[in-house]
Image (cartoon, rainbow, N blue to C red; front, side):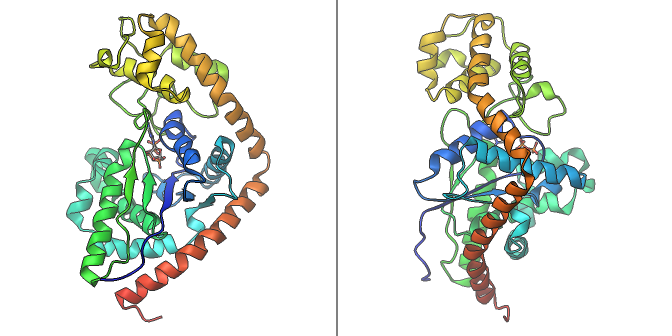
Length: 338
Ligand code: AQP
């Protein structure tokens, strides 16, 4: 087995399945920004994944795609330094996804917790695309021979499946063609929880808007949501161990720590002993200070949809230049006549 040595390269994506949340920002985008300059970075708007749960209205999908592009750029993704594009413009994703549908096993897919959560009790009525989603995600990553995939906790199992698909392909064809990509899950905000229920992750698709902070929320909305966030009656502890069994309190402290680029212990040294009535306004002020410049820049960019589309189209050209030879070599390995 001899093939390429793999150049360190980052790939990650976000679905344009609704407005961006603070969970997407802290768990993904803020960390994507921090990776720029360390190695080659490729960031994708995975619009083909965004039609797996339900088929959104076309105008909504277009708007969400542009808003996510604006969110990436307003948060600090530089489309010159990173490759920024939407998945459907690079047909190689779907093409490699098909090969991986044939590599992945039904049993592997059935074990995916996101499939179980999203399909729920009515799995017979879920789309085939939702079931195959992790194989397409493996294609997204491996089409660029990415070695590192920064994600939130919830996506760890899908990156592990990507490794299984790469390993099976390499083994079955006797090659070392695809890298075993590493999930990169670092920092205090790899799992930002719902403001209404500390056992559920903050999610774009949660029916309750009060459960999440949207990146487009104004200062009043942020303050209201934090003021109404579920907590417990006790004061904040002075050390992280005191957050044990207090999921809502832990979540708010983690958000504060992530927004201020501090660790939890250092935050608790300052706020330990305070009641939530005192801590929540501190958290609101910090969230508004950090998020307001991003949301106003997003609003400005959204006034220029043609400029956003041009950035995505240039990004897609750059992505295709990497993807096409990797797909061509994959077809050759598989034995497809070209
Ligand atoms: N609550 C979260 N905390 C930390 N990280 C999170 N991510 C999402 N929610 C949180 C991370 O954001 C990246 C993009 O996720 P996605 O939008 O592609 O899919 P998702 O994980 O299914 O996110 P949502 O918000 O829950 O979307 P819907 O509601 O459409 O399913 C990933 O790196 C993810 O880990």
